[in-house]
Image 1 (cartoon, rainbow, N blue to C red):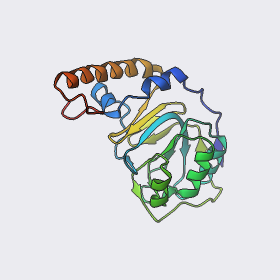
Image 2 (spheres, one colour):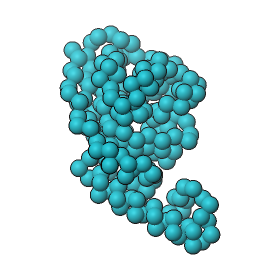
Image 3 (spheres, rainbow, N blue to C red):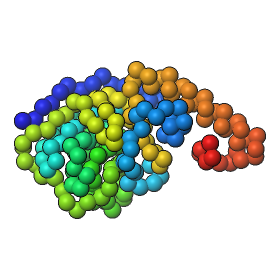
Image 4 (cartoon, rainbow, N blue to C red):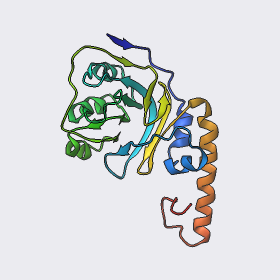
Amino acid sequence: MLRIEPHAASLQPELLELYRGIQASTIGHLTDFGYVRGIRPLFCPIRLLGSALTVRLPHTDSSALREALELARPGDVLVIDMSGDEERACWGEFRAYKAMAKGVAGAVVSGCVSDAAALRQLGFPVFSRGISALTTRSLELEGEVNTAVSVGGVAMRPGDLIIGDEDGLFAIDPLRAEELGRAALEKQQRERRSRDKLGYGHIGKGGEGR
């Protein structure tokens, strides 16, 4: 049986704007909580920022993902919990087409993806454990949309702020996102001043040796 819950409240535009230029590694200097372990970007450079639309799949059956794509709103990040299956791919080229048409910001998969060459060419932001030719199927058995999930050791809820780049991925509770974001922005501004003072102002992204 499929369980489909209502959409979480949208993140405030001001909050998303605050995080627009923040690096994942800056967040990692300020907190351990929310770091998604073992999930890597499919390509680089990459940038992911948006609100979590969560999906829980029972291994082989990806029917709930179809429902999630129908519900998806612009700026959503599909966060897919594969229930421990790290070998099957639930995401590929044609799901990316559908997501892009809906304005989805990207996808985070606790398992694998397929059609890697096409996904890279599309430039659709994807983070996953890896790549696999073994895929899920639409079996109409069960699955969940907009419920609590676990990805990379992090409990995620619908509406969490998802931020990712070449350095990794964080999921942030919206209730603490503004405070954390302002601290991260201040840190990056201090680093920029230090970089300029040292004569390395031409470097666009700091972080090395911090």
